[in-house]
Image 1 (cartoon, rainbow, N blue to C red):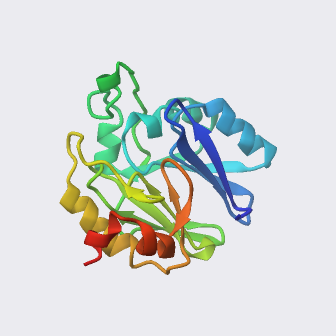
Image 2 (tube, helix red, strand yellow):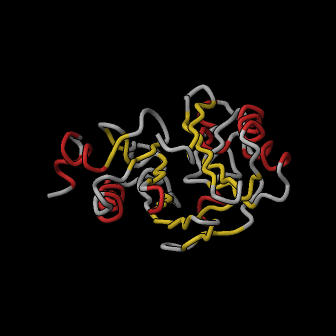
Length: 214
C-alpha cells in the first residue's frame, strides 16, 4: 500500500478513480468517473490541493464526474491527449449515448503529448500514448512511486476491450508490449477497473499477455 495513492470506486461500473499526492500536499485526480462529491471529500479529508485532473481516456465511466469536479476546483487543470479531449465532450464518442447516458465535459486545459513529463513536486509523471481501447488513450507512469495508472489497457488477469468504435486490438497489444511490459517488474499497475496488480504478475499469469509478449 502506498500512502501517496488513494483508490475510490466511482459510478455504476465501479471505475477506479485515483488521488495521488506529492510532498507539497498537492494532488492529481485520475479518471473522475462520477461521484465528484465523494472524491472531493477524500481530498478534503487528506487536506490536499487539487492541482491536476488527468484523464486516461474519453469513455463516460472515466469522465462523468469531470464537470462537477472542475467546478469545485476551478484552478485545477484538466490534462489529457487532444483526441481524448475532443471525444470526451460528446456523448456519441464517450459511449454514454450508447447506454442512454448523456455525459458532456469541459475541454482540456492542456493537451498532453506522447512521452511528455509533468513535473509534480517530488514526482514526475510520464505520459505514455497507448491507444487501442479508445482513441487518444494515455497511461501515466510515476517512477518514484513505482506505479503506472493505465486506464482500460491492462487489468489484473485481463486486458482492455477492443470491440467499441475506434478500437484496435493490434494497437492495444503493441502498446502494452512496448510501454507497459517494458516497465520494471515491480511496478504496481493501477487499472481503470478491478484490483491492482504488478507487471511481474501479469507477465507470469495473464493469459492475454502470452501472445503479446512473443
